Length: 227
Image 1 (cartoon, rainbow, N blue to C red):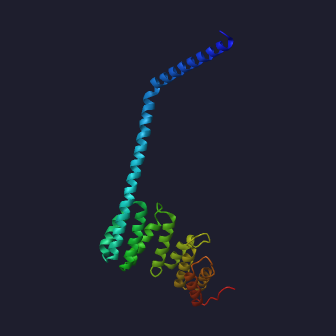
Image 2 (cartoon, one colour):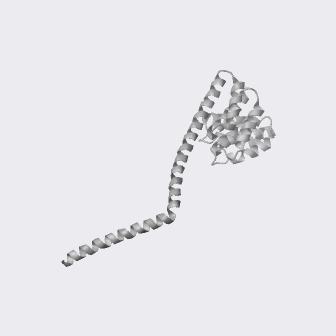
């Protein structure tokens, strides 16, 4: 046999031995850890099945919440406000998270339509104080509660509550400053009110209607527009 044939035979033998050793090692590992590996595989399968089941259940919850919310809105349109309020009250507790907030907001509006401003304020304040609610909804609720409380709550407390929303970086600064200005008027501080109304009137990012109203209110306070 030539040297090249010897080398080829040697390489084949090494491969066969290496393959046998691998097989033996796999057999040994399986005998030692096969149960754990099998359990892990089953866990993965169950995990995937569980995740799919959870996703399916969550989708159904959202669909059910959407349907219930639409039904409540239809009741309001039909003038059946008491029935709508009862349905929305249940949704505010049991619905999927997003629809819980929508239900509470709609319920607050319904309370307001029914002449229950205090009830609406209570709902908005509850939303504003719930750390589990997204910031945008909390801030919106705080603004609405403050507007509704201007004639009944302590004006100094309202001004202070609006401070975090009146900063330059806040998307709600225009409304927050208008609320602060109106509260300052209630306290009899026309100068402070005029200053705040001026900030709103001169803010190009503020809605035009709000700017116009602020300019008119600034004139009412007797404060001249800043040059």
